[in-house]
Amino acid sequence: MPSPGWDALVRETSVAARRRKRRRLQRRMLWLLTLVTSAALVVIALFIVDIAKVPTKVRPAALSATRVLGEFQQVEARAVGIEVFIRVAYPADFPPGSFLGPFIGLCQQRHGTQNEILTLTDTSELRALLDYANRFHHDTNAAWETAAINDQELVDFARRTLAFAQR
Image (cartoon, rainbow, N blue to C red; front, side, top):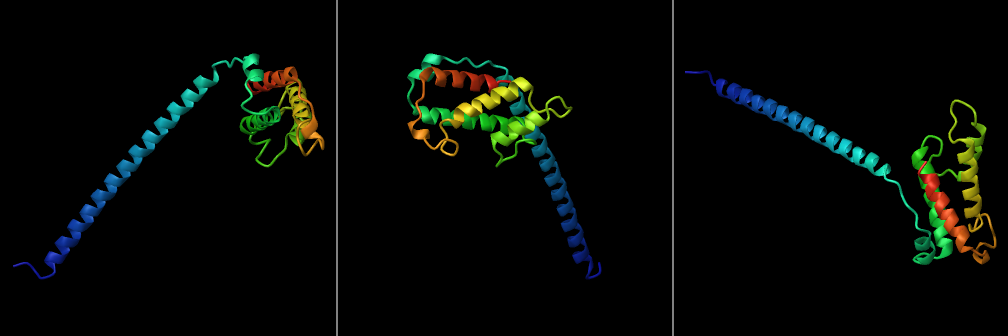
């Protein structure tokens, strides 16, 4: 006849074995989940790279004829688009909370150095886009609400903004 502590010892051993088996299964499932998530992220990245290669065509008639947004809102939306593009393209040099003016100054300081951010042409184009957008911004122009917006200038600004974001 086995000793009275024998049943408790067998029970503890089987509980420990089940626990080890459950932990092994959990580790395998976690590894599988990590693998599947990584694969999904790679596929998404490939789609993004593929989509980025598709050229965007601008139709000036559509930009000037569609009045979904007012002219001021169109300029503001495109200026915000430039800011978002710069923030995504150059996160180390243009962190959240930064403004485009000081970023342009930083680009000008780094021209011709190893850590150049934008080329001279791109920097001057960004400055021109910012200057146009600032004509209709409340912080830089006190009379921004009464500023006249020329449709051709707006279409040109939209074209140049899209071209800049494709660089």
